[in-house]
Amino acid sequence: MKSYIVFLLLMIPFFSFSQKNTADKANVKEKAKELKEIRKFQKNLNDEYLNPKETPLRGENFTHFKKHPFFPIDLKYRIQAKFVKTENPVPFDLPTSSGKTKSYQEFGKAIFELDGTSYTLMIYQSLDLMKMEKYKDHLFLPFRDATNSKETYGGGKYLDLKIPEDNSIILDFNQSYHPYCAYNAYDYNCPIVPEENKLPVEIRAGVMYEDVYHH
Image (cartoon, rainbow, N blue to C red):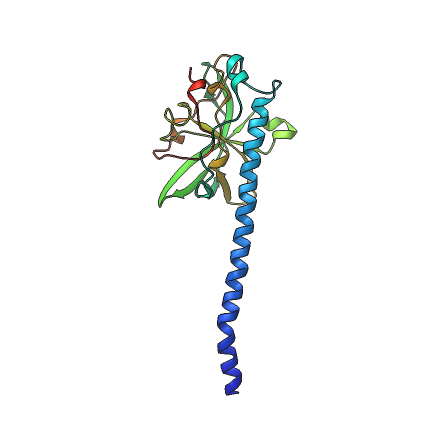
């Protein structure tokens, strides 16, 4: 009996190491998956802007375009946020860059922590897109942060999301992008970021902005 107990005591560190090793491998695999997803987003965005049928770029901006500048990928900015759905949302008109409006409703809010501080961002749903089968689960998160007018577009950036299945939602700011009107203010009508979605910190992730696009 004594030898059996000694054997168990000797095996405990082995099992602990084995479990830790398994968890580490799972974390590495998950991070690799997340990085692959972000790089796919970057490639797709570049391909879109290089496609003359899809790009918002015109004239020399399109001729000279090679690829978007991006902040270095940082999984710190891929955040699992708490999601709180808005009950009985009321449709409203969101002002746009051209002085017109687009119809949205508040779908919910994302509550998350960044560097130990809690923040809240409102998430919206387009009343027009929700009628289309392709976009019925599409959510819209416009935001501003302290990089705007410096390393990113002054009007802020956007995040595309899907309706979550539970009370959490992934906010991957590495996949944030500029509205079309950041590159072509004449042909596009972009929703203006609501004041409630202005973050007082830098979100150093996603697409950056180059002087060639400034109006």
